[in-house]
Image 1 (tube, rainbow over the protein chains, first blue to last red):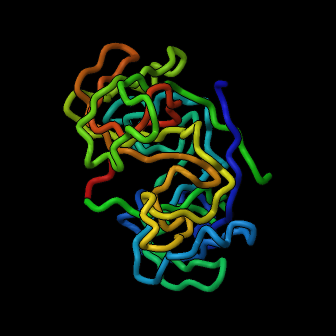
Image 2 (cartoon, each protein chain N blue to C red):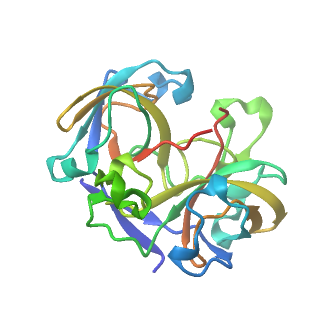
Length: 132
Length: 132
């Protein structure tokens, strides 16, 4: 088996509407929005509480999956880098890893801050954050 | 669209043979092994260098994807938690996020330390690590 299927567990709602409007990285972002988790996954949310910072995986549905070399953050002065040496959205599996702060929890809706992801992006996973 | 396809870009080779032998978390692990990246993705590795710590995403191919509540790390005294509040391998999309140190780079083979993943696990992605 050389592939597998990911299932979207939810979607982000926010006012970042175009990729070029997204903050470059989540730790430079104070943008808030809502993670809407689909009802069939609600039981998985038990234990997520306001004030926690959680790790969130998104599926970057607009990304080009065929590119293996990029100019990091569009800066051509630094030369081409392999996508695996960057955090470019362009990569064979366009999965973004963010650390987001939970502002409110209302059933299947988590209000979060720190977003660097555009409105409508599918959510793949939430995890307890590793301590650093 | 409520699903997407991930493509395995490589595989890990190490001496952790069973899930119960894996260290609980990568930051508690000094286990070394090799990430073999498939040749068609080699261009994506340009810029990864010895001594870097990189973020690596794995597809936990043995994980149960149907479970939404778990006893964290098998400890029943703490009660059941939603999988999204834990780092259990059991979750709808069994994607693990590790931070691994690059020990050597030889073409498509990266020797790394910090593994908490069993031999033969597919690799989904490598990324530049976020600074903390």
